Image (tube, helix red, strand yellow):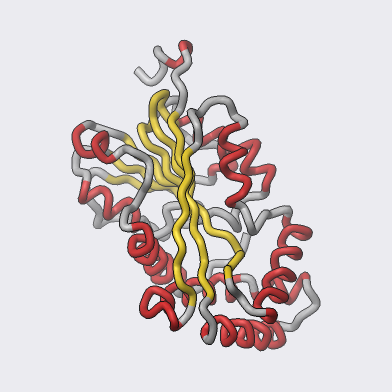
Length: 274
């Protein structure tokens, strides 16, 4: 939806390590033993520079990892032998047969998909390529912060409303994911968890890094906001500075959410993928 900034790769990597600090693990689905001891196949949707895949590929040498993204910012040549990357848009369909992967992972796609995309294309495709008995995990944050001040709330609400109205994208997506996964009828009970993270200098290095990631997202939105909300980019940046100053001098925190479930066995699937 939004243009790629010049320092996107480094900020994506920083966000990955921020998640590691917050969650203390790269995933929540119970697939560690599967990836460590069996020839599991793993798919990462929207892999970006491939940091998640590269780390897991080294840790789980017996598994094979595939990363897809619409932008070729992932490693082209120097990479572990159990990894592969390809340029794919899931909205055009995934180029894999049914029941291909033991674990399908997807995160940070909030600004990419409309609600209709999520319901009619993305989640059905993720489930389709997951093996019966395999696991699907989705991780997202929201444009929502807690213990924020009046300035921040006002700016954030304006941005959220504009994105909803102009793009049909839901910037507070986490309340919807579990329901969208459950209503497919193809997954076991969806499990979920959330983690809090400080936002701003009160949270030390984690809080400062978290705020840098938020600033990056806000900068990506600059052109969209100036085009759709009647602000010049200069006015928008002035508003942001007021909001970020309020955040940095308060005790604001953010949340990220993980949702995971096992694909149910269906009789017709028993003979697929062989």
